[in-house]
Image 1 (cartoon, rainbow over the protein chains, first blue to last red):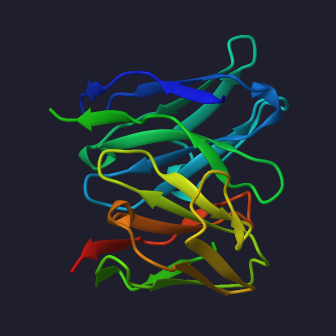
Image 2: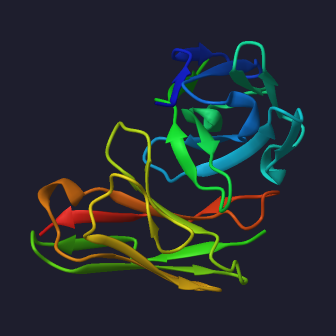
Length: 119
Length: 108
């Protein structure tokens, strides 16, 4: 059974950075892309970017280009999402999700990590 | 970017009702359309992938249809546990996935 376990909640100051981890177990980590999706309070889902661990290639939503970095460590089956220059609008729950092959649905999700940006 | 437009944004229905939610893409996405259910405080859950394929473990009262730009999610007979928010998502463009704005399904 695939599980994605994310790191705990964070409180950050405006202008700082946050790095959220997503550790996979129960599957072949490197073979599947991992996406990051965020959800601001009371809002919908917003895709941020993805990485294919076996290739180490990431791509990002234009909105986050230059502020987000997604990486993966194959040795620990862990993906990371780092967001810099934080502002209050970045307060959200951040999810990682595994993409299944074929039509790329997100079939497994992490439990979510609340990032609060506040002075 | 491919825009996804869901309708309605909210919906009131009763247990036993048949409910349909629609999703329209701004350009053709073939069958690269997925549906998710999200309950408060929980991660989204995959219901339907490839427009019409039922995810393992999902009750058969959920079904999806469509291709190209127009898609629907149908719940044939609403159960109490189905009251949640539903999102469509296009996975056609791996450079930029996008979600619909969501449909909140409430008890009438």
